[in-house]
Image (cartoon, rainbow, N blue to C red; front, side, top):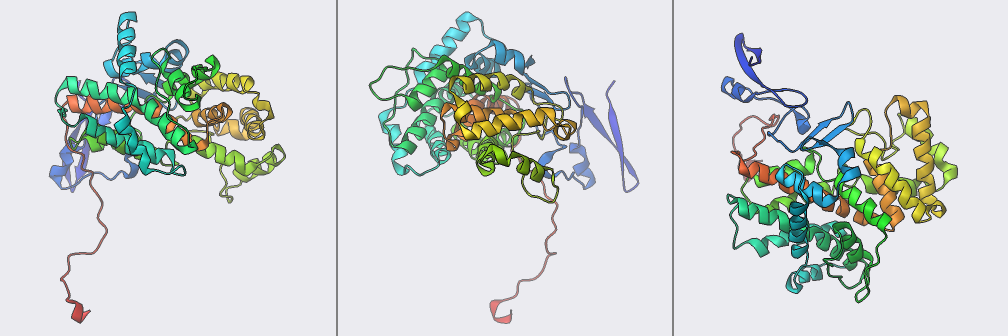
Length: 426
């Protein structure tokens, strides 16, 4: 039976269809009310479905995150980032042969030619790595411009492979530029995460030497960040892509959106908070400040806008974080000591438990990356690397189906129509 919602506008009854979701809340189709001279008001689109999607499902009340129907904890425990990329792009998990071919396809496209590398010459060592990454992703459009045909599934597949393959190379190049070291070429004998770490921390001419603990933790970070439904950056990719622009331009737009401290910069904000606290002896003072409604200080990395119970990604990331802390001897790092103490407080004090202020993915990824020796300016870059398969999957899903150019409405509160007055009479 088709559900409908009836609303009354100026005494006139209007029926709106209800669209049934396969999981989660059903959606009222409000497109018809424009004929009645009205449209809806929803700042931030918190109550609006902007699209149909088969990719990711989130149930924030119950701490559920599914990629193509698979629970994030099962994927993070049992699969690799390459497997998850294939799943997002193709809708199903690969068999051994498919995964082998996909991994080869990615490895073959990881290198960046010397001419393209000059894009980094326009930046100084002090440039934020995200500014370099945004520019380089947009620059990839020039490499694929001649064959641009977003209506062709083969072109869209090639664009996806190029972006997933080249983002770790670009990210590592941004890091090397920031520390004034030579770029390291990718090594096809390494895994995706190993390659990224080697390109960041290896030295030219030296054999790769990447810790299995660190590479496993990095691979898990990529998996946990691979997609998160219609968040700000993904919605930006879709909105930009709806203009039928080059996919590399759409992804560059999403990357810029991710840069914001309220989105991809949240794990960087965790480290800024730890720096502000400064020492274990100050923790009680800052916890009291966080509890004070009149104090602007906030504990970053606790609770989540979407997850009201617990963050399923954080539950998975916790074990990796502790493994990295142990291997790196992080017990001697004062900031990580603060983080570990805050974690204990959040899990034991009623104030945090009652308000569901649990450590979230940003908390654990932040302290993990810190323990790896990765500077905070690179945190959002790594988020970009992880989110790439989700962005390009959503772009492809939109382009492959009938779509409209995004055009949100507004509630106009400005001046009424008025006549122009010449400058002599003002």
